Picture 1 (tube, rainbow, N blue to C red):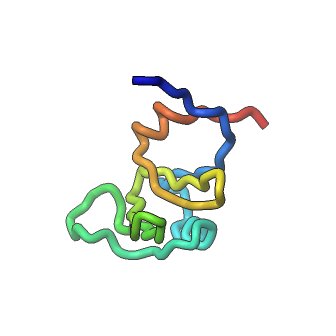
Picture 2: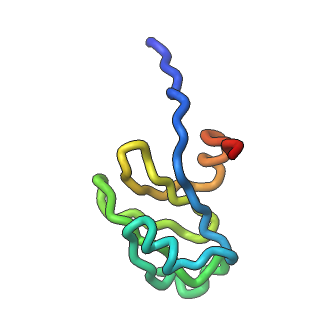
Length: 90
């Protein structure tokens, strides 16, 4: 099978941590802040739901929200983000 390499592109992204303001992040990505569906979840009480072309996706605490090259938004798990992206020097 042929192999392909991702073209280098710069993206905007923010990680949901205890230091981020969920309402501000939701406003940035057009998402909605909602309570975490599992009442005993210890990662954080809120999630951000984002409407994507694939349907509604949920960004949980620790996840990254990415603004793609076409202006679309989607969540990404931290391990996948770390394997795929690196910081760009300002």
